[in-house]
Image (cartoon, rainbow, N blue to C red):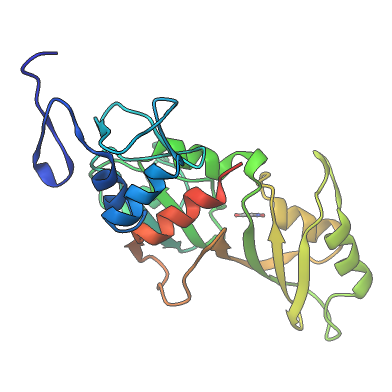
Length: 253
Ligand code: URA
């Protein structure tokens, strides 16, 4: 529309033609402007479904930008938080009758939503964002993003039996079907490291229950490429642009 102005990242006025594509890509972490020019020259970037050429400008609010077939968020104001969720905090953005929620542990504006969920009694890493596209891909089963947990289970002094570990690895019969193969190891007597690709409700707890070792403490320590051993419970930090790029890459078909 003639005379229309929009505000780009950092509040600067974006011209009607939009911003240069390589500048936008560099800002969201795909490398230096020169590296982003090479991405464009190599035909790896599409705008609104068409391969972009150097000199292309984009309207960050409305144009759909893809790198290597992955839609990436370029709109100004996208935020990505990594939270270390403590126990007794609910993973929801809705009203919970006074119970504390994960969205209350991060800045209130802009509004973000949790990506996937952790039970109230589960601790550990949770991503919150307002990037609906990435959030959708991270939880979509077709991408099978790995989630890694440390599960402290109730067991005797001999720890978890080899046969139970084998069942957990190969698949456990649950009331909503058999679980997919998982990576499972006993890192310490009674402490299991479990990597799953699915995200069924209370899956890890139900898997451990099913083989006779109920969980006493469950901590998520990795989401795809994202780990953080220093973030204290209840604290959050921004994901770096590099981490956001890695998440985008991890959800490429
Ligand atoms: N599996 C569970 O059982 N609980 C969680 O919170 C996450 C995975």
